[in-house]
Image (cartoon, rainbow, N blue to C red; front, top):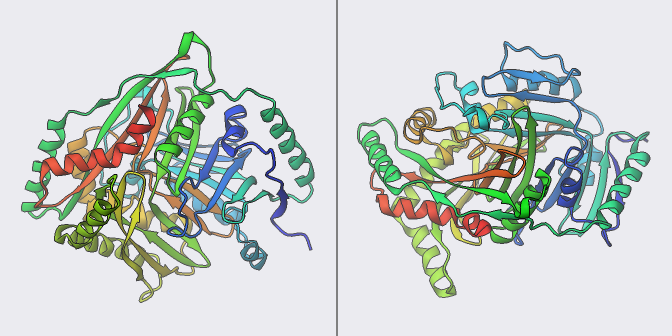
Length: 486
């Protein structure tokens, strides 16, 4: 029997790192989802790396909310991005061979790589009026879906590498081409440090402190219960000795730096290009927005943070203090209720439950309180329905979500872009996995020799928040990114 998914196991001996395929062939291998943290038990199913190969058809939403696509897709510009994606998905979705796909137990078996900027929320909630992007920053799409039929998938737990493709006829030649690319990479000089990262500039403290007070005023007036307010860091990157270097080399270099400084279960990168130039997202996110597998929907909210210590004893004290703090507990429970409500929009009534409550997850620079919420999907729920129900994540907006996004737009005064957006994959059988893009950088090409690097970090604000402590929390969360570029 010929299956819809063709698999070949590849020896990992002398095989290049997956990011190197992008470094040397960025148009052919533009997207990587990876796990760079060592403890994969806390995020089952994230212990895989997926390199997406030769994306073909695409659907794109740009900053004037203009919808475009490759010629292969018949789109309706009067409809939103997610509605158009659902129509495309319905034409290609599979309902057979599902047992085989379940048995091979790989995350990606053919489908779409997807990316959503935070500003996609404006199509989901048309009442929103979110800040616009400057023209120099419009290479980054608001939303993007790329049809991908081939991938390299590395199973970290079993140390096995697979080439996955949808075509039984083309599989042998595709594998041959892949191995030729691997041979070429192994013959190259992989020195990747021919750039200078200038000093970081940080948004002035007073802007955030005034924002905290304004949020507390809104809470006192009864508008909201909690708001996640963020602030930015930025720098520039220039070439050493005026040497010309490909954009993908810089992205690869930053990915390696970030993977070492801030390892995380939902890492990766994506590059996009248009007439405005090249832009890439480099992620080291700890948070899952949603996962769909075997008709079960899952979300894993993070809310509650303390910095790491150099002392084991102090780390244990900080974890205990975090989990016992009345403010942190109340805030976390409130956000769990928000996530439960979001899942309830697309799940069978009565099936939404919290199967992990307020567990601890420790990363390189912070401790977090994390819960897991699951529910059984309604049979007619589409990928677009699911994303509309949960995006953007409640932990990075606040409660209630729409009013919080209005306040965020008022106080931050600039688009978030990739920050608190999402990237991941959607398979042909409807399974999917999407992160929340926190602890992530954006690299924007400004000229052949100079690039802008920026990122954001936020804190959840409630009525009894202390501005200086919340300011420090943004720095604690950003520490992995700061260390990566210093």
